Length: 369
Image (cartoon, rainbow, N blue to C red):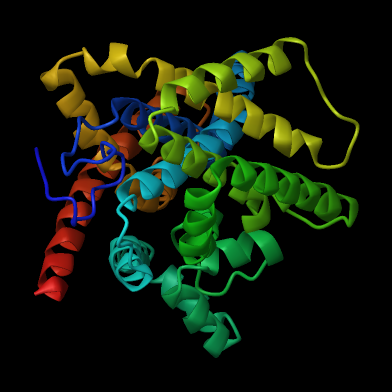
């Protein structure tokens, strides 16, 4: 498990200060990635099968599902950005960091699976998808948004449907944050506390101003999502400096007090900030549980690691498969039909994600050679 100090570490690991040794992988982020994806899958399953749930004769089940998903989906999104920021910062902790190498590696890992998933979605939806794509105007914009994986973000933020098939807004927002990462990293490495304070002030102000201005979908803005992303970076830098657990204890304690006493400032956009606070409370709590999770054993943590490694591929394909299952198993008022459609979509999504991950890895290796 040891590597030379000059090599970049995979996301989700930490570099021991002053050594070239890669310590044990941070298990808690794998658990959080799985939890986050399960919430997102459950939410999208409800969206795609809402008519079936409504007609099932069990309105309490639909109401419960809506309540649980509605409360958790915002938190799970925050957890994804926290884990992304922390994982990137830990993997880019070496002193001879290269922005060019970072962009090449990260965007290759991000975009090649996206392109494969886009083609998969196109094939699954034929011939209707091809007809819809040819009917959309703005051909230059269509190509640019899809090639850069920003089509899902544009569809959510501005209503530009273009050639959007997979990826949703999350991927486009992450692209913007990846582009800014080298500058954010430099600031975080120099003065982590000042970096966090400035990010907090800028992001909360941006949430308030965008909400007051009446802009739609404020929460998907990179300025808004930069708060959990940068908070993850800060925790990673403090981890590198040997103060990770101290920060987790202080942060978790303060955040729990904030939530318990229901502290809420009277300002536009505070709902977004409150959701980020809940995400950060869960994240720091899980960070404190790392020693316990690490003792779960190699078998358990190995399985968790492998499942967590599939979450990006699952994220890309699950929506397409859910929609396909909803078409093939239409609503007929039976709860069994809803359960069958969701279970079938889960199994098919796992199979498609495995194939996507293997195919993307093969293309990435070929491109590297």
